[in-house]
Length: 219
Image 1 (cartoon, rainbow, N blue to C red):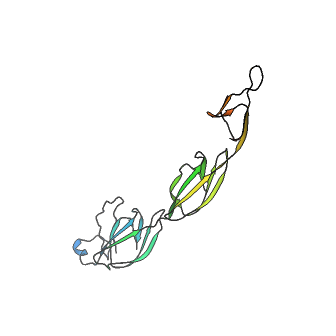
Image 2 (cartoon, one colour):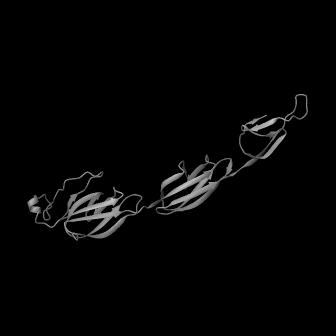
Image 3 (cartoon, rainbow, N blue to C red):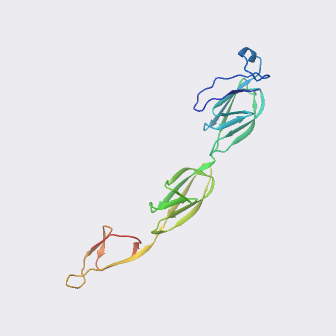
């Protein structure tokens, strides 16, 4: 028989409700004094994991009374590796404490892209963050695109507890532009040429290395 005494999530304590080993009905402390129950505390890092010890289920941190013996202890928490092992209750005296440090079942990913305005997709899903702290283990595809650049993608493998790094610099798509000026009466004029606010030369001016797209040209 067990006395289910979970510690409620957040650390609050639930008063033990003792059940008699034979009838399963509540019994007095005097009746219970003759039994050999052992108080068991189960903790996990991080807390909030689902725990099962025998038929007892709770959320860590948890506590309950058990008869001495061997039990199967299982602890699960999303994004962490599950733990399942046999434990012996009563081997250390009147109280047993089981502390389980759960190993992360995820990794981190940091992405550096140029230009910074490019769209980034992770496994086909558009993301706005450039640093992810919780990514499933295994291979992932990072794709970067911008209409004015040639798209690129890279496959990266994320491992447990590690931060994967991805750096993708897009190659620009270049076009040409030629600017000429004439005097009102005819003839070529030499006038300053500004592209997107920056002076680039004087007329006649020509470039084949401008990023495709719209530009503001001032003469």
